[in-house]
Length: 79
Image 1 (cartoon, helix red, strand yellow):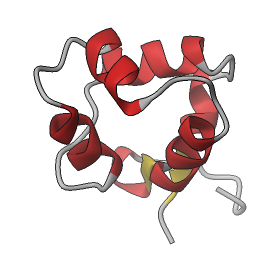
Image 2 (cartoon, rainbow, N blue to C red):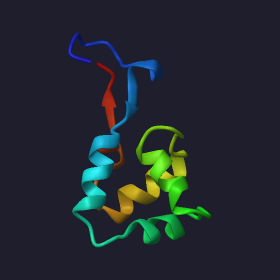
Image 3 (cartoon, helix red, strand yellow):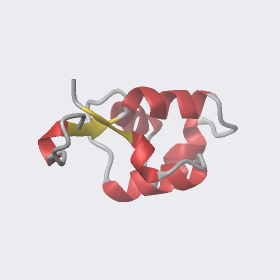
């Protein structure tokens, strides 16, 4: 937060736009990510990316490893 206060949980959200961009620029296909995250259907992954269902913490951790980005880059402050 720019005012020097620590952010609260309600002030942050998953950066879904970045996650979509990372997938689009990676060698991983939707089907690959579905398997890696242990999901049954690719629609389950798409629903997460679209914000209909939240990513689990361990899923975000795996994505940060796959995409070789720091975990905290997958989060943004709510506007």
